[in-house]
View 1 (cartoon, rainbow, N blue to C red):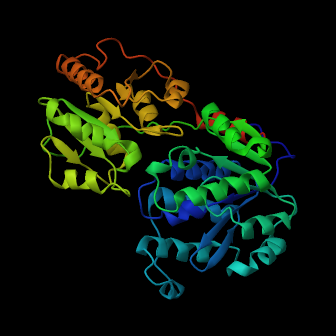
View 2: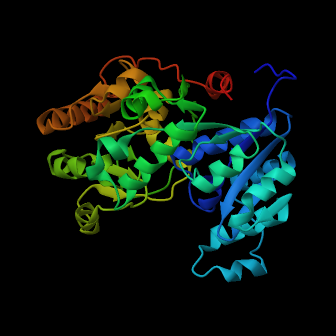
View 3: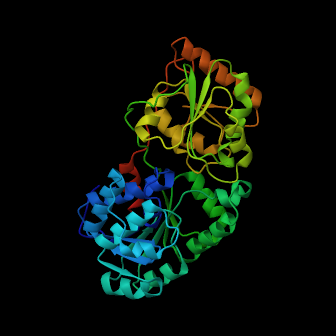
Length: 398
């Protein structure tokens, strides 16, 4: 992207990324990391802000670059004495927060955030919140005291549109978050036209200026696949095991899918006890594989008969897009967001039609056994959105 002297100084909120230290990055985490990596590569002054267990830390560009390297490599320093003041803190997060204290140019307890920003930031800094965290009244007031421009990336409005799939309290928290976006944000970044329309529907006349900037699709090079008892043909599904992802449909169907294995790549989430109990019963030809790296998942996908994704609601749906970018057949629920992002690449089947899902999976398995693409024809070519395009669009507003 072309850089000019008019480029603003940006303040990137890194709270969510730091809170996930030591865990595999999920979709939202990947977006925050992509922004951090991009801003580090521009060679321009910028800052990072993170809320920690003991208050706030402020990083300059050098500190942000060091943080980026730690997130990328998973190499964190030791916990420090202050870490012992926080009871029950996850060890990985304790090490990350200790590193932040070592890297930062300033830190403060929560009530002194405004004073810290006034002392260290120029007026008119452009604040970017990507993780739906830390957009609090305290942060907004501190930013406004520096005449900051506030931009927020809204990933989806699923908590309001599909509240039955949410953890307790999540709907109220998201409603409050979106209300603050409408009240205080100067710009909204949306990952799709679907999300822009959903945000506008909820905010009405309070909708800030918005830009649609589809997320870049990272295609991991296949590495060495993990070993296991599965054999060909096998299918892969990727994502946190939560009700919205609809693993229950696949578990219902699998006794009717002869000789094929199902690999569930993802950690257990929340409010899904019945599905967890079914997995604990170790159903035949079903394998739960949490904690895999991107390259391991890519390797499993590359050898699979296809990606299965019966999710009931999505804001973007990165796993099917990543599978399509690898040339892997995709069978997914017929959601508008997939039509927008993937067009005619997947095989679509309504998640309520168990008969159709069963038959499509059987067809894909048969094609795979015959050495054909899972669709029984030449694989359509998917030209995935790029991060370069995302930033070219998003940074026009901020």
